[in-house]
Length: 239
Length: 239
Image 1 (cartoon, chains in turn green, purple):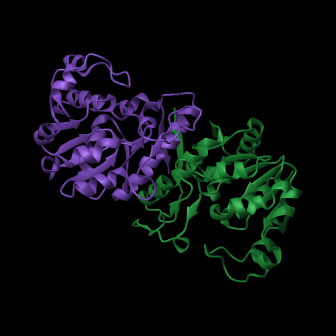
Image 2 (spheres, rainbow over the protein chains, first blue to last red):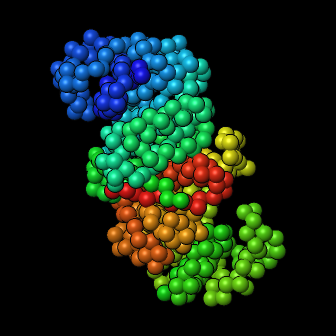
Image 3 (cartoon, rainbow over the protein chains, first blue to last red):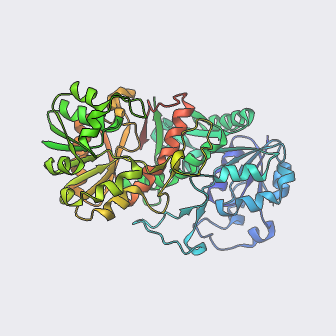
């Protein structure tokens, strides 16, 4: 299948590489492909320059956001950071129309973007915006009414999303939420291909709020386990 | 041990009854004991009138909030609803000084208290206040600087907190957070007496944010499992 992955960060790389491994044709979208390839320094999260990573991952085609989205048959993975996602996706709404967009972003507002201090001992708890009475998933759906938005992946590090068996043998739970049952099935099938055995459909997209707001507990659990920038754990819904 | 439970709702009843079962002397606090005992109708959550419940649970002594707190040796369980907790606890700050206060409230703002609509399909997602950049646990600690506040129990229905083996044989995780290591140990010991085998210390009280904000995902999981007012599930941290 032709699948698009929007974004070039660590999470987007994990999905792109895994989708190639699964035999898909992968189109990665970035704002400006030439600028992305011209970078020679690691990004702010310490990821290697994209051009270098791309050379090590044949089978991935780098395009603009819009061209990558247009190249996808039906499935687009949104790896654009939460703070920029609505604006960037709105500009390519026509290319996303009729397609399934799976979104895993947390709408963090980082320190350099706000006056809000980082009040935690581990320094990685930025403010969420929106929060509680709205969610990024719902914002994206409102911005893209012709697209079937599914919120998923967000309760887990993306390296674990594409390789769930790396934690506890894979015996943990992934969630999906969205308004379109077929789109949720499509994302669930992708998750099963990734190795997930327990995918729970929470219901409509309003459940994205709980998934995004779980980011704080996720950070705290990682901290409690001594994994400062970790997340080498899963959560399992025990019935 | 002499333990106080503040509040007469369903969660507080679950703790009071279990603590008696475990052999403790239990003092339940309410705003106005005479008024509490005079009620003959079920409360708004459908719980039986407290006087009737009390008659069926010998070994529990009903007092004012302050007198119950004063009667406790060292441990007080706060079951006052989140919206009223800081105000009610502040009035008895001197009786709580030096003691451990374990708080499990979610700071929900209910529909009748606000203009905020309930936007979910299951109608039970009130707004959280505070949220994200503060928590009720931290607010209580600031209001009671001489008390050792521990946030716990909040990620689970209280009927499951006092009987964890009722869900999945008890193979799921409970969290504690707070500034005082001895107080967290005391709460962890109580949880072990309740039957918990996996109690994770998340760290300082700032982690109460994640625990309280998990309320939305908890509701969504219950909805996804078809448990409209349920919560007959646990979450397990899979390492």
